Image: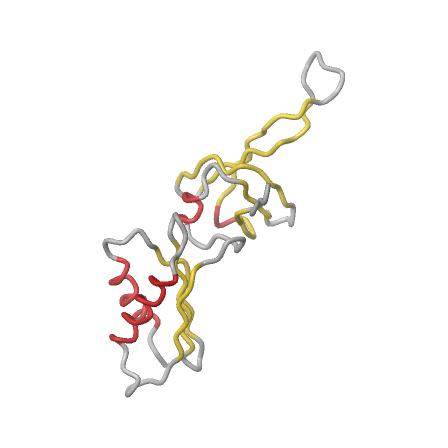
Length: 155
């Protein structure tokens, strides 16, 4: 079986001096390697091909037979690494907390493991008869939510 750390080091070597970052690396028992990368401006197919060739040039098929798949993290997929959160600041996201409650709002900030989402909610304001719709900040921890993902809008 191919060592995951070997493949990770190869990918990280390719990523040096590039604005791409690794979001996921999986190797199955039958040596099916899946590499996911991302970039603030999206992933280009040419770069996936280049990375694939780079990995293949450093792994020997004589030693281990493997299947290699290189692609992007994909729009609408849950975030896997902190850099993805940073790339979507100012954009609409959906968060599902550990209790299964989903909220939609604008990702305002990221600080370490914490992130803030502004959610439009009806709030009771003193002096008003009816609740007023306002943005309310909700703070979450990346490792304590089921998922966070970018909401694609066609407006």
